[in-house]
Length: 205
Image 1 (cartoon, rainbow, N blue to C red):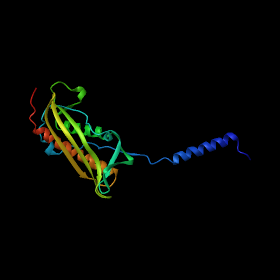
Image 2: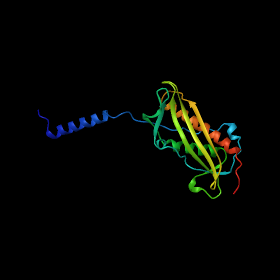
Image 3: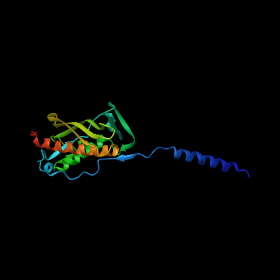
Image 4: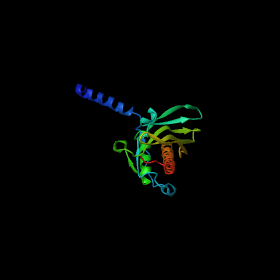
């Protein structure tokens, strides 16, 4: 019995749709820093340098302003940065790092403002990120690296500037391990940043 013309077309179209679904790659997995745990007692004991601080969103290279997760194979080609195929940050790293630093500074007792809320005379912290990546020393061992430069201004006057770098081992040789290591390195830098701010003698306007 012949198949009606319309039914045959529907079957053919359905076959194409199923083929298209089958050819799709794996669904991407998204990562972030996770919840900000309470700060260590040593960090909490540091007196805030100022009661109010403006923290500008972090600046950095364009590849940190996307959701792609990057790694380097130090044992093969340290100059090449490679993206994971099916793993992403749920927010670009520059935004993740900015928010974590603001959260940590606020936890220390400082009132944190954005640049849009800034008032004249309030110190401003600027962050310039140099590195934020996972590096593999071998095929099974990797670590997360974060490096940034912090500059504190009051008005147009530079009060102080310091470079911070932190790294930590990844628990697994994959994107999940890299995300955890980078979150830990970012928290360590936030603690270093708070200690630095606590040592500064910030003049009044």
